[in-house]
Length: 409
Ligand SMILES: NC(=O)C1=CN([C@@H]2O[C@H](COP(=O)(O)OP(=O)(O)OC[C@H]3O[C@@H](n4cnc5c(N)ncnc54)[C@H](OP(=O)(O)O)[C@@H]3O)[C@@H](O)[C@H]2O)C=CC1
Ligand SMILES: O=C(O)CCC(=O)C(=O)O
Image (cartoon, rainbow, N blue to C red; front, side, top):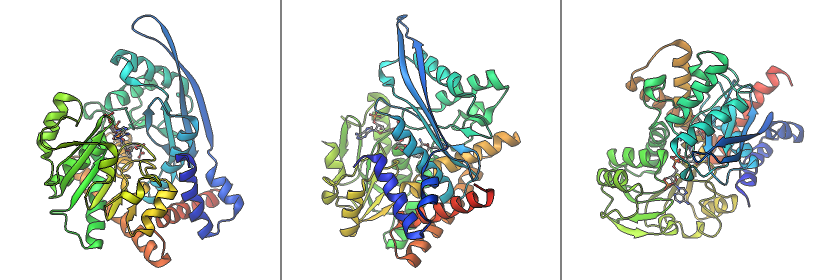
């Protein structure tokens, strides 16, 4: 089953338990707007190259639409639409006054120079500037985009509409970005991990984590869990993985990645494959790369007691079922990785109010928001006797559905 269908499956399962009816189900599942644009740039060689860009706006009943921008060769309009819907449910789970959106460009940025990525980003903004905006749709980083890309988005949009820092979040702190956004998704995941470990009776100290993906989310997650007493036994990136049953030296690994650009070849552990990371002997598995990491083929081999979804859509429904039957508890993406968009919200609030918060305040607000969301989801899971994922969707669909009805269809 495709990632796209998988996420719709989770939505439909919860909507049917709630008995929202077929018409409301269709309304909530259908994006408000899907935009596909041509993004043509001149390469450094003078050659013209054309890429496809997307921005999908899923729902705005609870506020302006919000979601990241992904640069990846395999991104499609359908995948963007699914990820946009995931943003609607995620912002609702953490009760932010936002809807959901997602965008992307089908491009392999490893083949482009920085100047070319800048031209690509600015051209994309030229093509979507009339449908985004601080009160309409606010972009943010996702796979292969970063604070520099966000700065170009802000600059290009401002050329059309005047100074507009609030059109995008995840900007560099020197240019209206908030303190704490870079590590926010990992930090939010840390707060959720503390809660779930407490509920399952595992202490943080000594608990063994395996993390797939060592980008923004995966690397901050590894560092924060390690600082909190966790033992990170395996990590991987696109080139492969590294494993040490005694725990990887995380500061040493960071040094290595800075030099080598990959976790592979790190001397503090043994090389392992992607699948060996998934099946590694650990207590908690954290997929923090792309969707569909956990499939019906590898789910039977997962040895962790807990899966905490840092990536969006990493677990196929068949894998989800297998994990549930095997008693592996899954903390869903729309709760576990919501720290990123939560701190994006704080950045937007600061931009609108011309304020700059201290990092302590950002982290304290994030902790409160994540704990509150966890409590609501865990309580719903207990009372409804459903998995955490279904409970999170029930909470989100309830909030979005109510806002939709109150506003009037
Ligand atoms: N950035 C954010 O604020 C948020 C991101 N997310 C989600 O988290 C996930 C990761 O995003 P982010 O960290 O921002 O992205 P990055 O681009 O920063 O990092 C992605 C990481 O995944 C690795 N990777 C890619 N393919 C594979 C693979 N097949 N096996 C193992 N590792 C792989 C990459 O390796 P390499 O470096 O070698 O290319 C890189 O380490 C995505 O699903 C994203 O949607 C969710 C919430 C917020
Ligand atoms: O920070 C944001 O606005 C959204 C981040 C994102 O794309 C995500 O949570 O998947």
